[in-house]
Image 1 (cartoon, rainbow, N blue to C red):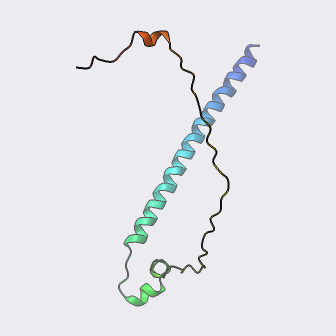
Image 2 (tube, rainbow, N blue to C red):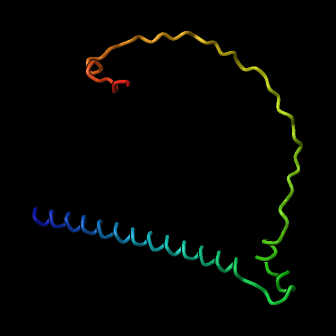
Amino acid sequence: MAADNRCKLEMVGFSILMQESMRSLYRWSAWLCLSMMLWTAAAESTHNHPSQTEAASCSICVAAHSTSPTVSSTHVRPVFSTVGVLREEAVIAQARLDVFELGSRGPPVL
């Protein structure tokens, strides 16, 4: 019986260690991805070429200086139609006086 409990405790301890190691693995991989993304963005935005011919063959420069595609669509005028008619109904609220409202009043008017 004592051996079974010890085995269960060891398994629980092993499980906790695995969870902590997985958390640290996720944390380090997230930091690695974030730092790689920031370094790539910095390198792409600050790189330069000594001559125009090298810039013409650089895929980053070609993508950055290419023109954006033009939108070719025909504009159709919207059609407005009545979907429904709003019918107003008179609403009469039931007045109710609570006991606590009897003791509370505003300041006197001068």
